[in-house]
Length: 173
Ligand SMILES: [Zn+2]
Image (tube, rainbow, N blue to C red; front, side, top):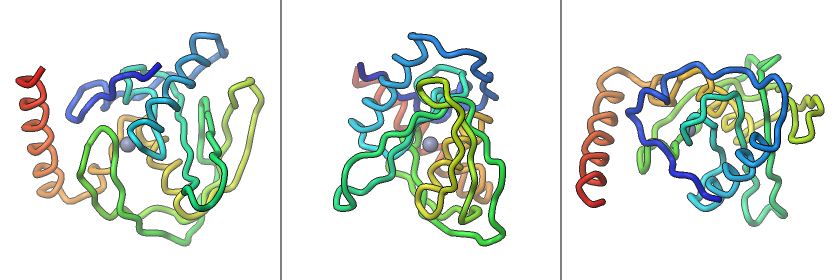
């Protein structure tokens, strides 16, 4: 089931999310819903707080169509355990900040540990777009948005646009 995506600014997008102690059917359903919501948007990553749930859960799939079959990843309690000194600049966007893009600099390669959908520990090294995406999503679990990396003026400009968008959407419904 698709879930509505919160739009910035929203206090729930600024919260530090709680670790997931044990998996449950409800959490697995949430993960499935988040994947459905992400693919429908369409997007390449989604964090639980973006659908209003303050648990440490992210989903992502950065496979581009021409690269082959989908690779949905579900990560509970994801954590960056190592990051490269090499950096990468990507033009990032966010489903909670529609149609706004800006360059963000992050480590190019990161090693991430998480618990998968079956409760098994996983560890993998991500590079390129995957690395950017997983760092962007983990930031969400700490109440951090990609616009927090930008200069204040640019951030305020984007926030004002989003406030206007929310007012317009509010009127339309
Ligand atoms: Zn985002």
